[in-house]
Amino acid sequence: MTVRVQLFRFALVGVVNTGTYYGCYLALLSRLPYVVSHVVAFLLSMVGSFFLTSRFTYRTRPTWRKFLLFPLTNAANFVITTSGVYLLVDVLRLGSRYAPLIAAAAAVPFTFVVSRTIMLRPDRHTPDPDRSGRPEPGQEKRADRVVAAGPPGPPCVSSPGEPAANGR
Image 1 (cartoon, helix red, strand yellow):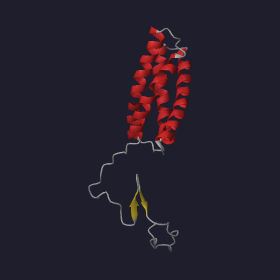
Image 2: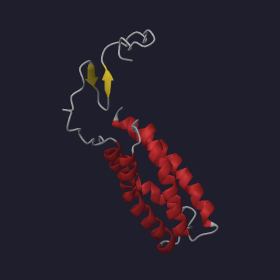
Image 3: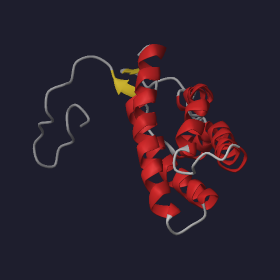
Image 4: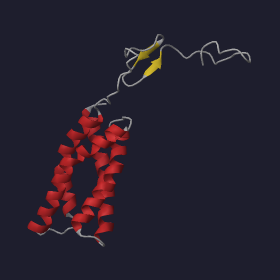
C-alpha cells in the first residue's frame, strides 16, 4: 500500500475520530469545563482511533505493544490541540464549540508521521534460545509469520488408533 493511500485512509479515520471526539466533547461540555471535556473526549476517541488506524489505515494487527505506544502518536496532537483550544478560546475569544476543530486541523501532519512510524514498526519478538529463528523444514518464513510451504495436503485420514499420516 502506498503512502498516498495510507494518508487518504488516515484522513478518513481522522474524520471519524474527530466526529467521535467532537460528539463526546459536546456531550461532556454541558456538565464539565471545556478543558476537562476536551481531555476526556480525547482519551475516549483515542481508543477507537487505535483500532481504526491499525486495521483500516495500515492493515496491521493490533498488539498490546502498539496499543501502549499509540498514545505517542497523539502526544503532538494532544499538545497542539490543547494549546490551540486554550489559545483560541481564552486569548482570541473564539467560541469553545468550534475551537477544537480548528486546533485539530493543525495537528494532522504531525500525527500521521508519528502514527506511521509506530504502526508499521515490526513487533520485537524475544528469540527462543533453543531455536535459531529459521523456519522448520517444510516451512517458509514470511514477513510476520511462518507458514507451511507448498500447496495444502490432503485431509487427515487415519484408522482409529493410528497417528495421522500427514501430521495433522
